View 1 (spheres, one colour):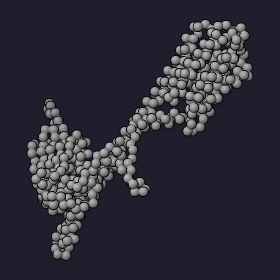
View 2 (cartoon, one colour):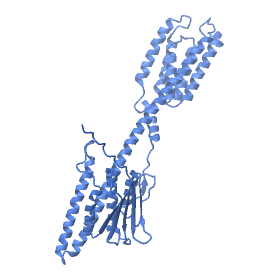
View 3 (spheres, helix red, strand yellow):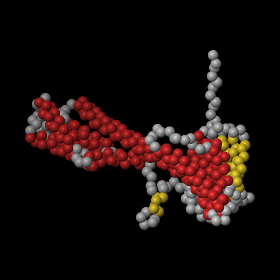
View 4 (cartoon, helix red, strand yellow):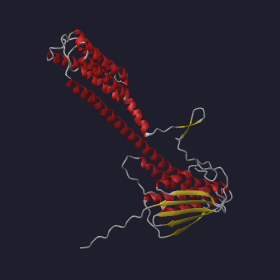
Length: 434
């Protein structure tokens, strides 16, 4: 269970240690919520590339652009008629949208170039700009806002050249210079596309971050619950099995010479194992369906006399002293105090040459000062423990905002000193009598 007198487990920040197939120990790396959010965003950014190309949306966009441009051409008789070449250019502008999730930068520049060629040919204005908007949206959402801005800027600059300088040499014949006033709506359209795309991108990242934070919180709660159950099982089994181990040794040694004393040892083993099974069952009850209440109350300092009797059965004499007005501790502090005393006495039984121990409970106004002393030197015997006892006590104390100090005393022996903060519960207000 623990070997605190000879070694203390480290408190590094790396992940839990595992053993690789070759016997080499490795450490698991834990990801932060920000890293998890980045992975979630990256998965979205790959988008349809994981499940195929976006055929349906691309076909729908192409149909809408083709039909809408046909209607727009009817209202622009001064532009070139929408012939087969014009429709081919519209399809050529829609086709790259199939790859907008895989190659967003190439797609946005390609669609902008095809759109500029469509305008160069003098075909009607209209839904062709929707192709550029979709390509820019995909590029910005995938994190390529600079590429989207350049593509829109180059398209707008090309349109300025066509509408104000090159119109003399380009179709349609007899076309005049466009009014400068129409450039303001064009610029507003470009800014609106970029702003809307950026808004969607930010919201998607926020949702991904929120999902990652929730997943990290769930994992953290699961880890905390797992560690809590592991602590409870360790504390229960360490104490009970230590008593069983000592009494089994006594029973074996006295089986022939003193059968009555051996019978007493076996009786103690039976009682200790029964109590251990009951506490283990109570701990495992917490793994039942969420919302179920424990079948029995958690142990506390009210069971300290039972703990002293168990220690006495293992050959350890324990004296308990109390200082200050005794307070009713909250359930968490009461359980932590009981487990600290239990673990400290277990260490005395397992690792100390002394057969006496002293427990002192000092009740303050807002904290419990708990000390467990023994006078014997460490036996140095291997007890087969895992070295987690002291770490578990410190985790319990830290969970309450307290501290644990454990080590050899200058005059010999060993001391465990715990400070466990608690808050006194206010008494209920007196009820008025009519």
